[in-house]
Length: 409
Ligand SMILES: [Zn+2]
Image (cartoon, rainbow, N blue to C red; front, side, top):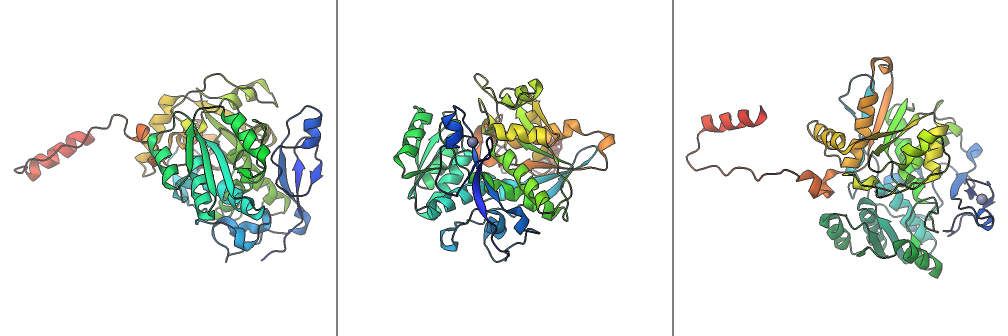
């Protein structure tokens, strides 16, 4: 196992450092000057010549050399990570799907919550809360249950019943509506609630640790591509933590010499909820909120995201892209016809990659991050569903084959 490098929290704006601690309000120095600025985990990369894995550790803890220091007894794992990287059909470049639907709660949010809940335990917290459209809340609820912690989820009013019921099934208290940002801020101010929230202190509180879990997606992709980074990564972007976390993972592997180049990061949004696309078109480095975000891809229906993810687009030479709901639904269906039940937000990334595909990129390798399963979104999967026909007792094989051929034509 690799020696643990020194680690600290660092402000992404003024670069002041502080020791790793339960700090959930961003950089205090920047706040004193009227700026909201996130703190993130940094490591002494010079002490790590290569990302040596701890093959005996469960789940994503095998990457513990590049994760926040958590004592073995406080590490929670439900067997997250280790997801397949599989080829999918597309014209042009080799397009691979990093299929995150095989995580314990069927989405990549498990990686972030694995880290957050474990860090919460390391700091001695007994209570955790999160704000979610569905996937994140379920991941928080599952990992809190595994840790024996109380869990409270503020959920989006449009979240389907199945997502809400699943959170309750994991034992979480769930609430819709209300002044969620103010309530979250008040819980953090009490000092005994751990926010499994995003990196950038948008609502007055932040969590620097969840992003570290998302990094392991990049670590696995490089491992699965035989030590190389892909040419491009297409990922859906909402709050931006997953997108930024994947980028941070590639950057860290580059710093320690595991990869010799970085991918272009393509931020993929629905045209009904596109703050990154608008900011990127303007060349802005600060996000602006959009009014009334609305899309079938509820997982990424955000008014605004974090600046860190926006900067990752610029720093990587990437782009922010959008597709409309019609194309999202069609792509989700096309993916199902390849055997992959991706949620609409994940189809956004595949749709953007397929639209970009052109013969000039034939030699490139692109990875699309399939962030979550469609299984938790019954309104999408069941749209237009008609209950199958009940066969009469005297139905013949000839009639049956004729029916099947009619259906597939
Ligand atoms: Zn600062």
